[in-house]
Length: 367
Ligand code: ADP
Image 1 (cartoon, rainbow, N blue to C red):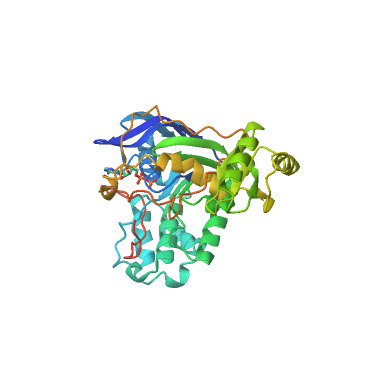
Image 2 (cartoon, rainbow, N blue to C red; image 1 turned 90 degrees about the vertical axis):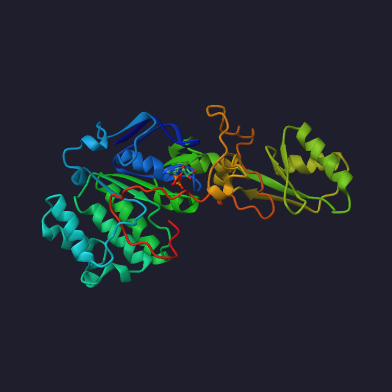
């Protein structure tokens, strides 16, 4: 089990992680979800003892990672990978890691088989595609047959076949009783891979719950209501009547209204009573992706425009940030503003930090 208590990391004026408390349990895939720059890699580095917390603690199996008697056999990790000696063959790269930890050579051939690299084992890794590099990094993480595995954005840049493979591997490793902690900025990916979710934004905990509960809590139903476009005063009138009846009413980008908290027949009756003509009244389901955007958007929104270039976030008083209140209808949806990309976080400042295991980077890999 991984356990963080009050984990905080500051880099000068930047607070990368603030007061994170969570547990990652064995036998499940726990997704670590948050937009770029949310603090996922920093947290993982602290778990692995590659960075010291400014305050708080994090333990693996009850002890700080640095105190582990035989670290590679207890914890394996794939972080942003930069440290592969590209001139070495895949097999030699793994052999050198194995030798450092007293792991027998036959285990190298085993893990090459697990990740499907046996046929290219004698090729130099600098010629590897991003996907092959990720597989090599995963092989390195698996070398010590560890009980705890950390993967930082393992599907970044992979093709659909590679993504499918990584997803199944995580599930299989969890089914063997291991603790699997995997980060991603993609809700869609985590919904398919993870059993449990820890969501962070701006370094702070936004949600810690089972994927099923997250889906149930965040996929609220709503109605779309459209009235004739040349009757804005009628639109106002209807919004007022619906709000008075207890609905949450929000504008849609195309001028329609999104209504939560009232059943369709009641909306129809209220419109009729107010003498407002409707062009559309249709039932909809908010998607999980929308819920995630909504949840993390409020965290991303605090980014300073001035500092965006440097990838820094505006430092508002910590502790004052709160998870937004869910509307009474249960949905989290707020339509994204036109042209807005809620995933566009600040590009992380590249910090000189050691990697636990590594796959070669390629020019198209931004990490
Ligand atoms: P994520 O992995 O979720 O994309 P990171 O943990 O990489 O997020 O980054 C969180 C924040 O901390 C970002 O604002 C990033 O710029 C900052 N940061 C990370 N590492 C360093 C560092 N070594 N020095 C300064 N700032 C850093």
